[in-house]
Length: 324
Image (cartoon, rainbow, N blue to C red):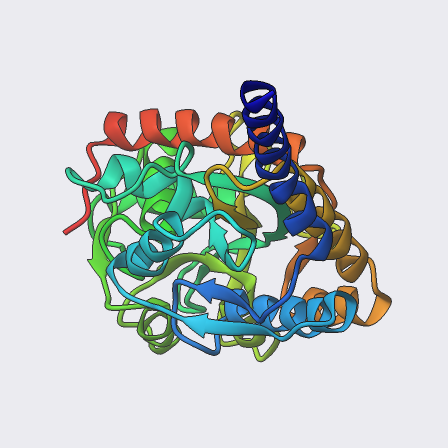
């Protein structure tokens, strides 16, 4: 009898242990959630995160607090989330640079952009523009390529730093067009834009969030976008690929949790986030900044992540680009 009783107790204890995670998921969230942005406040990623924070706070019934942990090209904040508990209380708004580029750019990384995270949802595509200073004697991409070939190595392009998305976009363009420019890296996107406006550099590949206001005021000329297809936000602007077939570079933002997050939490967050991204006022706010909101399942986002990690990893090594 005693032996049977002990076995019964063990079976009961095991049942409680197995049901505890399910009970925890059912009551989640029971405390505030931290949404990490691995860059400084004020940029388009930060603005998008704060839109999500507000919407999730309303739908989940717990505060969702945006925490900016910037530095090391996004690696500091991203590492923080990779090392957090996968309980749904620490999330990240990352990008294609933090999760697909940095692995190839840095010789030593504190995380794996694919293996150490749970992809929740792709959030948005950022319209990536190619602009030139008005002094450049070209009104379209074909004319600009001809100008570069006539003046090899004399035209300067700005970037937000060695190994940045701006740098990769320009290096890929040089390879596709068979041209050579001078790379002038800055400490961030803002000074790169300002010096291109001032004419100290002549070319810039950058998010429309930074360039379009200057295009509208005729301080920069917009030649193309870098995505595979024309942006619905700029339907009259050609892609680089229309002149250089095969050229494509898409910049996305995504929501992540640490690896091992329960599928039930991932699915719920995905549903809540996609509902927020479908709100007309959210769509308009982000569209005004050149950001096109998307709608994916966790599985679809996982496929995008794996594809781009392989693609940009190979490309960066092929081009010989490293982070300083």
